[in-house]
Image (cartoon, rainbow, N blue to C red; front, side, top):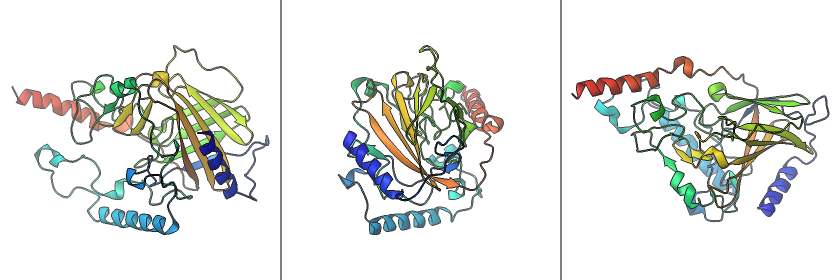
Length: 339
């Protein structure tokens, strides 16, 4: 783990040789701005790539061309529904009808890594413990699957008897990429960072999640106080901002590798995030998940973020969440019709 981290640090340092990151008034690196973390690089290395850590330039170009072609094909249908869906929804997720509604990016990360996971060296999530296996939740976007309450997956659900049967993102409680930790996903892959000498604020575009992170050395919240985004405290290690988060609730997963999968619970996880300004347009975001109850070892993920000059618009979820109401209402109507 230490060797992998050292190698990545050297690679990152080499990529910005001769460049001086912008500085704030207090002399610290200026991390402020709107940062875009879209990428087509997968979280885990595809198994068919074995121990291949990086793509060649030719392989990367071919992969991005394939992605562009797929996106062009998915943009061909109309962005609005032009004919009714068959009864039962046609066996697919209801929502966007082409890629107009998605914004997952068209490029892989700049160093052509084959996974966002940089440790373990195989680019894969470590095995789960027996307790982690028992607590795993897996849902589906096209059908409801049996899931024990509380439902911790972000999207999908286990029925429509009550709002609590639905995923957390469907209920607008948390987003499916805002974390912590932040994860590239299908859309709203932006965050805005505000910085003063004693506080950092992270505002995620999705569900306008906001974390106020003190840098003044105050302790975490008492252990019994549990929150959706936990208790975050930050400090500087040289030019790197380090944010440590604990006190997450058991209503979310220890880690969610996808919107329909939740591994473990937030009760036992410790999250360490690192933010380092690489150059004018790049913020390197790394995080380490340490949960010995759920995973057999810690793992580390690296996501380069690109500076965006575009504004970040207000996100509405509860404010227009007729989908959840319709799910529950439709279920009640179906119950009446089945009598």
